[in-house]
Length: 382
Image (cartoon, rainbow, N blue to C red):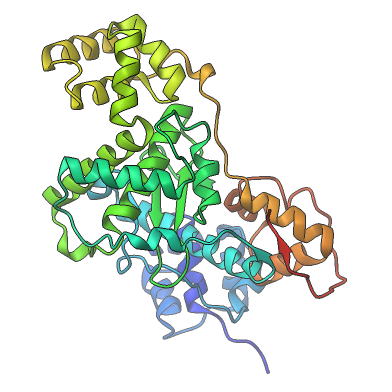
C-alpha cells in the first residue's frame, strides 16, 4: 500500500522553518491556495512538488510520507511562555512551537530507554494564579531552591545543571534575536525549558532560565485566552521577580551588598559572585530597597553611557551553562546500541543538523549511518 502524503508534517516543517504558504508558493511557482489545499488535505502535491518542497524545507521527500503526526504543543492553542510574549510575532511563535514538538518527540523516544530524574516535585505548585504578592514569590523561589537541591542561600554555581537534575528538560536552540527563552509544560509529561543560543551573555542566559522556571512555578496552568497585554506584562514582571529571588536570595544578597558596596565599581564583584548581569544586580538592590530610586537611576545612566546595556564587562567571570542531559543520554545509548541514532533519524525524518540543534551538541553530524538494529537497553543517566 502506497503511503499517503502527510499534510500535518508539511505544516509542521513549514512553520518550523519560519515560512508562510505564500513564500512556499512563490518558490514553487504555485499559488498560496495550492499550498493551502495540500495542508488542509483537499489536494495532494505532485511528485515534482514534493521533491521541490523537500529541497526548500531541508528534508528528504520521505519526510512527507511518514506516519507520525507532530506531537506536543499546537501553535495558537497551547500556551508556551515566551519572553516578551505579548509582542512576539506569530511566525516566531509557530517556529519555536514546532521545535518544541520535535524536542518532545525526541525525548519521548529516548525516555523509553533512559532513566531520567523524576520531575514530580514541581507539581506541588499548581500555577493557576496571576495575582501573587512580592512576599509569595520570594517564598516560592525559596521552595524552588529546595527542589533544585540547594539548601542554603549561596550563589547557584550551575543553574542549568540543577534544573536538569530536578527532572526538567533543558535545551538550547537558535531561533531569533527577539526570542530569549521559552518554556512549555504539557498536561501529561515533564516540563521543557528552551534557551536561545544566539545570546552572548552567560549572566543573561542564567536569568532567562530562572525566568522560565518562574513561569512553570507560578503560571503553568494559566490559559493564554485569559491574558490581555496588560496581564502578559504582569506575569512577565512576576517571572522576573521570581528569577531575581531564586538567583539572589534576599537575606544573603543584602549581606553581600553591604560587604561590597553599591558603587558602579562594586557591581563587578557582585556580578562575579552571584553570576548575574550588573543590570540584574541593580534591579535587585532597588527591589530590596538596598538603594533608592535616585541611586539606581544614577547607576543605570552610568552603565548606559559606558555601553553596558549592549555589552557588559566581566562576562569572562560568569561561566556559560549548557544543557548536558540529552547529549549524555545519547552517549549512553550509543554505548549500548550503535544503531539507536539511526533509529532516531528514521523516526524523526529530520536532517542531522536539526537533530543536533535540538540536542545541543554534535551528536548526529559526527556519526556514520548504521543499518544494523538491535533492541536498545534501558540505561540510567546517573
